[in-house]
Length: 122
Image 1: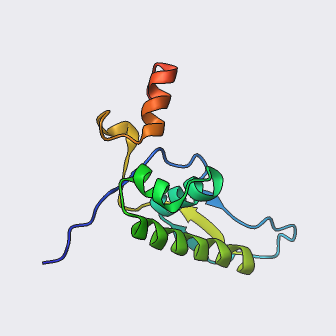
Image 2 (image 1 turned 45 degrees about the vertical axis):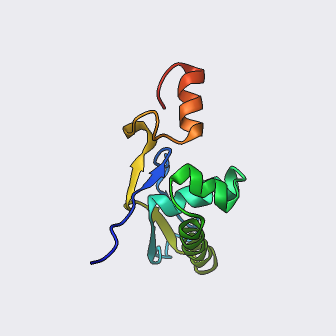
């Protein structure tokens, strides 16, 4: 029997879900689209933008460091492919749960603190 997949905890979905090259020449057709899952995006956001370690990222997402490392390597590869080859990246899908859908004890500390500091949910 296969091990059940663990849904990763994600603070929120990205506001902008499609990124691509700026093409001045309108004769050029947009190239391939690379799909990045929401949890791959979340690892990039937490590690590269927020400055988390892989261990801290794993705690925030409710998964182990090895899972974070795998997601991070996949996401970086997709970003590199898009940048080097002028591809568009679309962020969608995956196996995740939003913090706003979880009970207070299941939320990541950041969402929990933000909710109580602002007096409302994210």
